[in-house]
Length: 211
Length: 211
Image 1: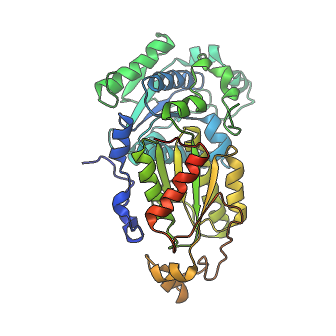
Image 2 (image 1 turned 90 degrees about the horizontal axis):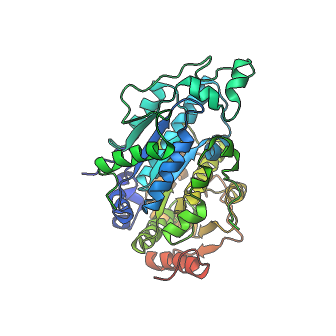
Image 3 (image 1 turned 45 degrees about the vertical axis):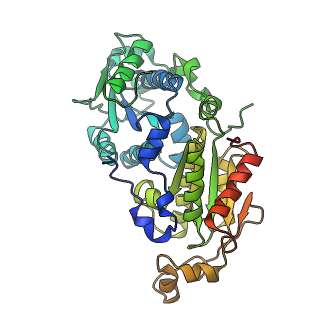
């Protein structure tokens, strides 16, 4: 039984003469040699989501896995460039990223999505979009004091000065996951150790196989 | 020189400690053994877009290429389920599909997008989003009389009866491409021959290599 529930090809059978020629998600996975899945990195700004996601992506790529990263750079300037930062747009931002993640998983890829995604309800919405077991929540758990010290983009400074409103962790809530599949403490581990923690989870759960 | 122009990782260098670990589009393509590209199928309802796209997808998959299909089934019910069929929503529908195609191409896949996409301006918009040479327009050129005979979903019948308004080819224009990279006449060729025409184009242009 395929775990895929949201994307079916049944509906188009009426206009596809060669319907039997369609490549199934299972065939794409077999071709790739691993399962499709989304690693959904969530955490504060400066927590290390992108850094760990890039390290995981590199390790998976070096193993021959088919991967991709979705982050602010390739989504906010493209697909979601019409969206702002009010509540409605933030929900729509995460919804679209979830739908795109689902397409990538359907294509058999392992996609690393690295967005703050501070609200439990939004992350639950994305989880519900994905086939069961293919949504892997990765909580990048870094104390805000450390994030603020790092402040790679100077955003905390601006938020403290009141120049940015609704900044997660300052004047907008970050709702931590209570049952993330993977819980990473970047303040206590090297980037490499953090990435290996993710790889080990994927090995243990047969999403990828040992080299 | 990478042909990629719209997606860069430069902007995030400030918050990526291991920036050098990022996997580049060229590395993903090397790993896959072929270029990323979008085959943008355009044509009337019933022209055979999905049929030919599925046949091409199957042939590419059988060669070991990493592929995916974007069509109404997996886009309209997911990413674009908030959009209707008025002019503004139709443009936004194509824009999002173009942006998602761009992400797949950036990930190194060959994506077959099968949508009527009747307007020259909308297809030009998508072409402009993609790296040069990675947007391949595939005109599925089937006379409307044949499409209407096939009428796989009974939509022409409904349009003629006035039950569907703004139906492409009946009371809404289809603007045929004047310089599509691939021009396919489904009324004169078998589905297999149509698909091989696409494969041959990709071989001739070094998007894929001979087995």
